[in-house]
Picture 1 (tube, one colour):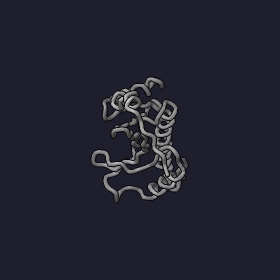
Picture 2 (cartoon, rainbow, N blue to C red; picture 1 turned 180 degrees about the vertical axis):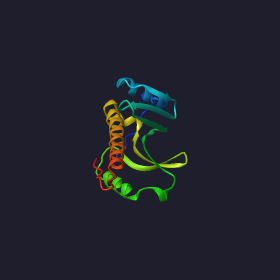
Picture 3 (tube, rainbow, N blue to C red; picture 1 turned 90 degrees about the vertical axis):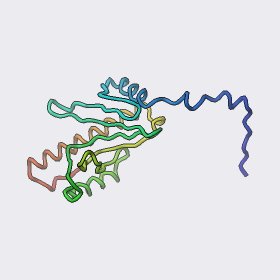
Picture 4 (tube, one colour; picture 1 turned 120 degrees about the vertical axis):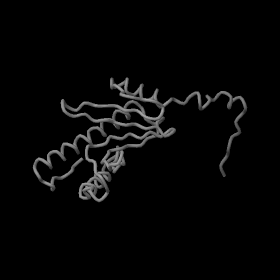
Amino acid sequence: MIAVENQSDNEADVKPDAAESKVSFSDFINRMCAVNSWAVREVDDEHAVIEFTLDQTRAQTMFIFSFDEEIEFSVPSFAAFDSLETVPHFISSTLLQVNAKTKVGFWCLEPIGNKLVYSYMHNAHMHLVDEKQFIEIVMTLIQRVDEFENLLIKMSANGDPKTEIVQ
């Protein structure tokens, strides 16, 4: 049998109101980016956009979306396709195998505009993400997409479709 203690009215009054203790999405993003000295391109209570310069010719864009207490991190790659029939299924199968080995993030085909785009995403409860975890998520997603895009560039330059995707 499980014993349940009754809570007095005084104890209930001492607890902070959930609405008062709730941090807004935009405040959360601004705080996390300030800690890491990252510039936020745009932010509101539904989404944020952060750009990272990789080198003089390339940048990565991270989108973060708020769904109540859930947040979705997404970094689209430049690999975009007109339809499911044009998606290289060898790459998709390989990325699914990579997903089985990763703790932070996952590969997916994300509809963006009228294209299907290989994106690396991560979902988390906003109140469980601290500064250390935020930087780990952001850097992992940016690095994974950068490695993937570099591999695609290398594959197209070499004409070698058998290049392994290792992450």
